[in-house]
Image 1 (cartoon, rainbow, N blue to C red):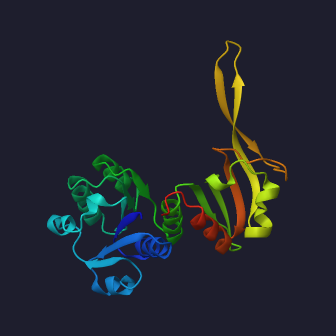
Image 2 (cartoon, one colour; image 1 turned 90 degrees about the vertical axis):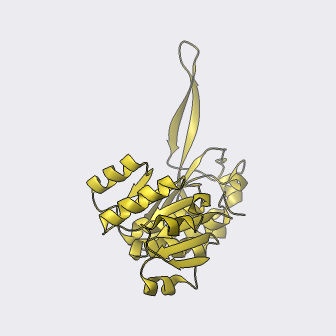
Image 3 (tube, helix red, strand yellow; image 1 turned 30 degrees about the vertical axis):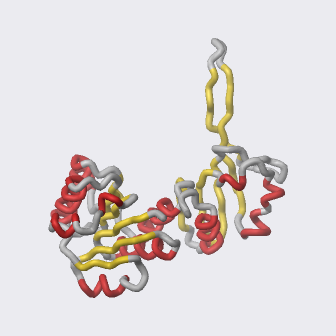
Length: 234
């Protein structure tokens, strides 16, 4: 089972922690506000009240063993920077961090933070979806309550025509386009792989390994599909 830590339980951090936990991920939630810790304690694997700038406290949580650590401390830039520096020091591999400005992001990049994210609840939602399933490349909320998602074709889809998958009937999700690899040969005999788009996929089109599906559907249906086809789900 994938293991994540979320530090800072504002709107962003709370959203990420809840969605990961609700989709079966192991989640450690950390904040120095006891009320926020209490709010999420029944949802996540572990909820801890601590100061994230305390190196000894962070070390006690074995965060270096997590698949990723998400820093949701955006408003207090100094605290965010110190937390990121400690996480790198104790050996955390993958770090995501909410930022308040481009300068904030540049400083974190200097410290080795690989992924910086502008705030807002929707961003937290998108991040959680990509962590739940590494198939997911993009996740876009529409005002209608529908979702457009770009995802690598799950293994169980490969080799099957769209007619057999019957996604509209079985899952309530429509395939609106397919990105695929096209092999061509140059005049000097070199193989070149191009990315092409099939923007009018038909019932007989077969899904190949590496194809990227662009799907449209109600949020509940899309989320269920992501979870059930997650490549990193035990």
